[in-house]
Image (cartoon, rainbow, N blue to C red; front, side, top):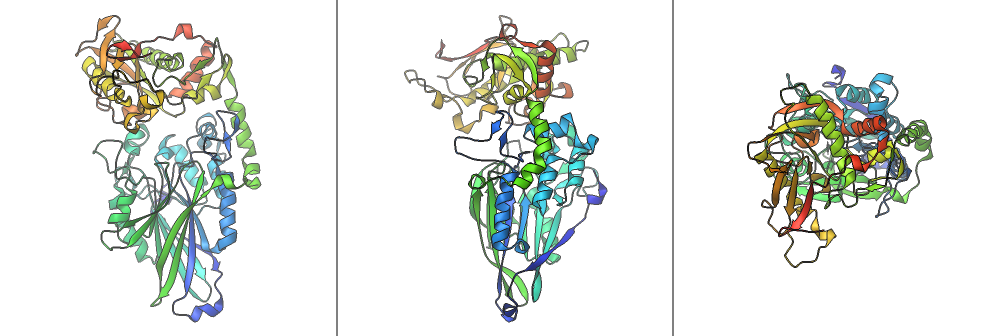
Length: 585
């Protein structure tokens, strides 16, 4: 952490607004100020899919990356005047692609002192302020501090405070000053708020060092300060969705508090928010204190969209006042990549492509994850095997060495494949798409049963005579695939004819029914253990292993060591779906 960042308030002067001098005497002169915004870039600089080794595309024809964003930004600056535009981001910047992974873990920029690819691209585009997302903390505080230092724009996070003192650990806000020819300047204040969930999701990196305070309370503290320093417009950049809900329990401040900030904090003109990866072109929320309309917008993810917010300011009684505001989303698939950014990123991009295409093992046969959400597949068993072996080695010689080791994993990607023949880093990363670390906890048989029942809510209840429609079988209540956990090391059935909570039957270990008080060591990822997904028991269960080993790297290391991926050595169909006791498939 760098103390120079503490209560620094950057006051940046932007060149004079192009307003005709003849207008300056008019009592109700209006000026439009434009704020552009991105969020959840997740390490996407170019329109490239490193897992597919090809240009990015999806079923909706989206493009990704800062090279596309740069073209949109240049266009808006040319249309509105670069002197009357600002560019902000709402967080989750330095994690999410193999490019980001490579410069965090393979050649960490805090050790090599090289420029982080996201700093390189964002500095070139000319961001005015960037806010911390929860994923900024994934790679530890030293790497984050390096990236913050490398950024030309201030990196904001008012509610990330030092654990002991409560002093902001990062710059809380910045004020941008825009000169208006023949008139007083316009000041735009931007307050950055990050996500309280960091305390759970990256506990190992922040515990005892940082605390994350409530977004609403933090905004109530800082917005009056920003207004007191003369801000005519106040924008909050928040790494938080807008539904007022949390994916964790009530022990922490609300996770998705963006609309709450708009409703409860006087003096906010707009909230540029992120975290939820949704597209919100324009939404208005009424502030409960002032009755004012507050503008909200969210630009999706990965640089697929750019939010454009327009503020009309009118001079009233010698003071600039916001008299109109609106926002829209621009689609990055409508423009070409900025060749300047492409050229700038070439070396680091090529290095990453070379890395992800490194062959680590040979697979005896093709293994696919397509059926993993509803069938026990060998490719997911490979994850379970590696996690189990890693934890077994770690607990050998400890008091827990005699306990059975089980493993939990979820189907993260239905498109993951190990081809027959050479398997690369790219294939491994395509199977395990998150930067989770491996942990192990102790659970009882009764707790395991609860856990599996909770997980089995993922399936919609199936009537006795209903046809099996795969599209309608899974993702009940909007539960994502990554929140459907499968357990290896025990056998069990999931009866989808039964209501949620009564589905797990025949839970056994080595042919014997699991008893309520039986003890198990369970390999689990840090996201799940820390409360992600809200699964029962695991957050309070005794932790027996936490060596900060990245699961994806463990898969790569295991494959490299064995050289061969042979399903016969790890595939074990230990669970199945049933309907009234009969196998569904």
